[in-house]
Each structure stands twice: as structure tokens, then as C-alpha cells.
Image (cartoon, rainbow, N blue to C red):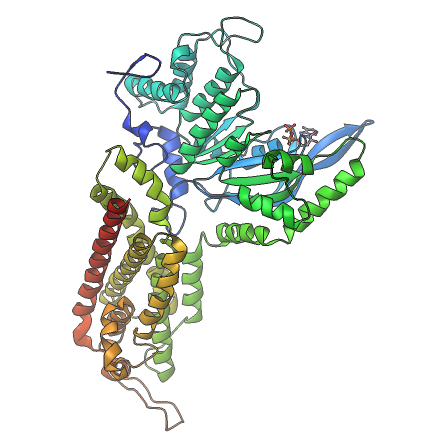
Length: 607
Ligand SMILES: Nc1ncnc2c1ncn2[C@@H]1O[C@H](COP(=O)(O)OP(=O)(O)OP(=O)(O)O)[C@@H](O)[C@H]1O
């Protein structure tokens, strides 16, 4: 047994809590955990995607109001669009009445009071729904407790209500203790919560922290906190935001409405959303907000707290209502056409359209080549076209989408590595293993869709071999992406080198240049190209045994290919290379992973 800073006896650390928000957390959270996994498996790179990305498009909220006996509809949120990426700590700010609480309740699917919501809110590409209560925590502005309970009793009751029935008492206790400890509430374990005005009860700040602790019980991947620091002294406020910051860096998405944060607290937020009059005035980093306001004609004086400046600029000044309205409109309009908004829109569009990319692209490709006939000259071009698309789709999307996988988690890994929780090898291995199911399922899905729609060779052998080649292609591409992301210090640097490498891969795939004509100095590069191995292997299994291709072209200049060997020879491919191609892709995959690990290891040593 250890002792915390408040002198309380602690039970051994619960590792699930220590690793909360990461893949490594144990699954003792019942429904919450189950749903978390579900929302993490929606998309293309599901096993790699950790945490929750929230995107909303053109969201408006209307409230019914009664005036002079007449019912009217008032719009309090006005067609807002935005996104919050996984692992972000977001400050939702604006003057009183700007619509912060309403927007947050809407995003959390907790809006009540006869409000009507228009527009779409997606969580990891899925429309939000009642399941939000399982995967998110919501800390209300007003804390409501049963005043006669002690902190310990309250947490025990809430743990019983919120956690899965299978959670043992020991696990519950351990979890409660860890949460209370991290929020500095262990000394209040036996203090009554009390009601306002009573003495010897929890202070306002402690109640806030208790409300936060209650939401942390289920370890939700996304947390909504309505004014979590209001009423707290600067030390307590700092403590709670620091904790949120730590949680965000371990993958949680945390959205807070916040009033007048100090400069220190403000600096801890990774993203800022400014609202005014139910509209978005800005979304982006705090640093870029200053730049945005300056460009819009509002410069923050150097001695000013930026947070105060933004709120003051976007507030309605009594006596100058019309001017304030004009100013707000100008800023919101300026943001709507700014590059900052374009950046947000890229994320929003991605969330809205890319979730089903594999299926959509697969269906599109399949439909374009519907009913391809292997036994015509046109069929030759079509089949090679399908093969090229199969190979490139299984290469480029995974290679680029995986690039920020390791850099994003690097700070968390470093912290846990420094605490001696695990070795770099175990970390690397577990990350790769966690990705593996997605790296296998995704190409299978893609090949199935394209295969049957486009009419590739309908034999079990051809299908299984094409699928195997698809899996190996995608795994080689993903391994290459992981290698580049570990070899460089930032994603842009990795991209800068990966793009030219792409060209080499493409050129040597066999589709654009006849491989036998490559200059000697370059010809070795084809052995690095899994695109070549993949194209050759799929072409081989698809053309194998086709002998009766008709020659119905009138142009005598165009060569007529009548058998499988001739088609393969056109691209300098050979049937004999099939097993070499498959083994080579596996070999490349292993080599890239080994190099990745070496880069990661060197990175840690260099620190
Ligand atoms: N149920 C309701 N009926 C009528 N008007 C409402 C209702 N809920 C919110 N509003 C109005 O919508 C606007 C936005 O309210 P909201 O609570 O979202 O603002 P806020 O930015 O969170 O303000 P604060 O910082 O003061 O909490 C306000 O003008 C408010 O009066």
C-alpha cells in the first residue's frame, strides 16, 4: 500500500485508470466500453483511429417562445459548422448568451426544453444519437447532488449506477480512489456534500471537482464540460484544466465552455471556438485567433489577456448595441470566408464523406468496369485498369492516412515509457498488433466489392490470390507509412519525402513504363516497389489460362494479344514470379516495420 500526498492509504494503482483513454485501457466499463469500441470501428482505418472526432455541419437550433399569447420560433444557433479532432482540449468561448451552452448540449445530444435541431452532427462519421449517453460525459454548469451524502457515498452510488455490473467492488474502489486522488479530493472522502449555506461541507470548488470526478467514472472518450472552472479559485481552476489537458493528450476529446480563463489556463487549450450571436466567429488554435482578429482589423494589445480580448470584442456593449452587432457580423462573415474556416471545412467534409470511402470507391470502380470481358482487346485494357486501381487504392490511402499515427501518440508513449510502464519494443509491437485486424479486413472488403461488380475471374483460386495480394499490398503500404512517420520528426517532413518516393513506386509498377526498358541505373528500384509485385501477382492470377482473346481491332498498327503470356509480356510480367511477388511484399512489410522500430528506438535514445 502506498500513501498519497494527502496522507491517505491507497490501494495499488489501477492500471486501467493509468492508461485511460488509450487502447491499452482494460475493458471493465461495460456499456461505455462496448460503445466506444463500436464508434471506433466505423471507419476505414478503425483500429488505428483512437478517440472521438466530432464534426457538425450547418447546425441550427430553434426554441419555441410565447409572446403575447403567440408562439414563435426563435433561432438561437445559426447554421454553424465545425469540427473537433480526437485528443483535443477545446475552449468554447463567447460572451454571455452567445449560444455556447446550447451548442454544447446539441453536440452532446442532450438538448432539452422544446428545442428543435436542424443539421447534422457526426461522431467518427456516424450521426449522433441516444448512444451518446454511453460514450460521453456531460458536466453541467449547476452541480446537483444529494447534499446528505458524503463524497465517498456519492461516488460509490454513482459507480454502481454507471459502471458495468461485472465490475467488482475492488475495481470500483480502486477507480474511485484514483479519480479522487488525481482531483485532490481524497481528504474530503468522508465530508458531506451539503447544501448551500451549510458549514462544514464541500466548498464550491470541491463540488465542481466532484461533478467532474463523477463524469470520469465511465472513462468516456469524449467529455463536455459546461463552465468547469466557474466559481473556482485560480489554483483549483488550473488544477482541473491541467488534468483535462493530460487527459486530452492521452486521446480524449474534451470540449469546455469557459469564461475569462487566465492566460496560463487559456494556453493549455489546444483549440478555440469563439461564438457570438449564435454564430461561429472563429475556430482554430489560440495563436491563430490573434492573427485572425488582427487581419479582421482588431489587434489585441500586447499586455492584454487574449481570452479577455476575444470576449470583449465579441460582446454586446450596452448603449452601443447596433455597433456591437455590426462588429460581430463583420467578424463572423470574415471568418466564414477565411482560410481558417476552409481548414475546418476540410476536416468536416472528410468526416462527412470519407467514412465510407472504401465502400464508395470500391462500388465506383466496380461499376465503371461492370461486365468486363477478358476475351477482347478492350477487355485487356479494362482488366489492367481494375488491377491498377485495386493496387493504388490499397497503397496510397493507407500510406498517407497512417502518417500521423505514431507522432500523435508519441508524447503519451514517452510519458509512459519514462514511467517504466513498458519497453519501446512492446509498445511498437502492440501498436502494430492493434492495427492488424483493420489492415486485413479493409482490403478484403475492398477486393470483394470491386471483384464481383467488375467481373474479374470468377474462380476461387483467382479470388483468394487477389485478396491475398490486396492484403499484402495494403500492409506493405501501411508499413512504409509507419516507417516514414517514425523516421522524421513531423508529419509534413515525412510527407515531403514520401511524395517523391511515391513517384518511384508508381513508375516502377509496370503500368506506366515497360520494366524491361528501365535504364540499368534505375532498374533495381523496381524491387522496392510493392506496386510492381502486387500488379504482377494479380495480373498473373487473373490472366492465367486465358488463351482465346479475339482480335477485333481494325488498326493494324496496334498489336493484337491473343493469350495470357502475351498480355503479361506486354508489361514485362511473368507467371513464374507469382510466389516471389507475394513473398517479396511480406518481406518489404517486415523490413519497413524493423526500420520503423529502429527509428523509434533512436528517437528515444537521442532525447
Ligand atoms: N429554452 C430557451 N428558451 C428561450 N431562449 C433560450 C432558451 N435557451 C437558451 N435561450 C437563449 O439562447 C441564447 C443562448 O443561450 P446559451 O445558454 O446557449 O448562451 P451561453 O453562451 O451559454 O450563455 P452563458 O455564458 O450566459 O451561459 C440566449 O440568448 C438565451 O437566452
